[in-house]
Structures are given as C-alpha cells and as structure tokens.
Image (cartoon, rainbow, N blue to C red; front, side):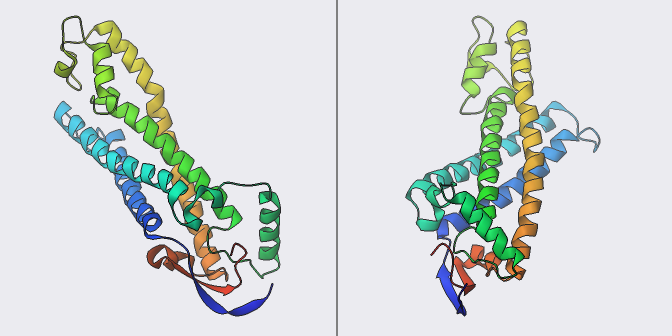
Length: 243
C-alpha cells in the first residue's frame, strides 16, 4: 500500500450524521423507558395511569425513532456516495474485499476507507435490520397496547363489541370490548412484544461490539472514524481503498 501524507476526505453528509446521533439518543431513551416498563413493579411504579403514561412516552419517542429510520432508508437511495445502499450492500467482490481488509489488519498496514470498511458494512446492515424489526414490532405494540397510529384504529375496531365505536375503546380498559376478541388480540400481540425486547438486547450487544471496533480502528491507523461522525470528514493516513 502506498503511504502518503494524511489527507482529508469528505465521508458522511449531514443527513447521515444527524441520523446517527438522533438514532443513538432515541435508542438510549427507548431502552431506558423500556427497562422501567419491564421492571415498574420492582421499582414501585403501579397503577393504570402510570402504565399508560410510560407506554405513551415510549411510543412518542418511538415515532421520532421510526421517522428518523425511514428518512435514513430513503436517503440510502438519494444521498451522497457513501450514504447509499450501493456502498453498504455486499456485491460480487465483497468476499475478496473482506479478505484483503483482514489481511491488511494482520500485516499491521490496515486499509483505510472513506466510507465503512467491509466489516463495518456488515455491522451497519445488521444494525439497520434490527432497528427496522424494532420499528415494525414497536408500531404494532403501540396499536395493540394503547391504540395509537398507524394501527390503533384497526385493532380497536377488532376488539370493539357490537354497537361500540372504536374511538370509545380505551387502553387498559375492557369497557366496550368483546371478551373473546380482546383475548385473541392479547395472544396476537404477545410474540411481537417478545421479538421487540429480544431485538433490543441483540441491538445493544451489537452497539457495544461496534463501539469497540470503531475505537480499535480509530487507534489502529484506519483514520479518524469517531470525529468523522461529528465533522463529516475523515483524516486518512493512506490512500483509501474505496476512493
């Protein structure tokens, strides 16, 4: 690899950087609220109003999370070069690129990248997949638990007793509901809640692995990865492999 003086490259555009930090804050906040909801009895929180309040706050932050994620998905088709799906999705040459990258690490002359290195690409794709699963399951639970959009009216209509308007169905209140249909809804929503929770656990494991990998890459001569997510620019000590 030809060694050159450190150069500055434009890596991440503003929408990608905003997505990253908004997503990070949302995940922290949602995880904190989720832990409170899962353990509210142990920490002395009880009552229907408290449960609805916690769930409502969780859902409202979830809307910010979902909107941010959807914008990022769309930006992957319309954004700058290194924000596009074409720069993330593995292509025909991905196996070779991954092998070359791993060999460069072993030789202590790591390849540098303006965008993500091959391992980073896989990490980001898995992370985005987990985020998408959390978004989908979260929106379903928002609809089944407190009848919030986009599915709330559908589920309220399903459990409403004959002659009762769906708008009269209230969270955590059986009044006006059909007992059989409500039981069916409870059974329907249960697996989505389990998937939501365990995906959150998997996401945090991946986040920790991601943080360790970024710190190691940043300190191992692969460029200024951490500061680039603030400034959008990378200082690279060698010619990037994805220029």
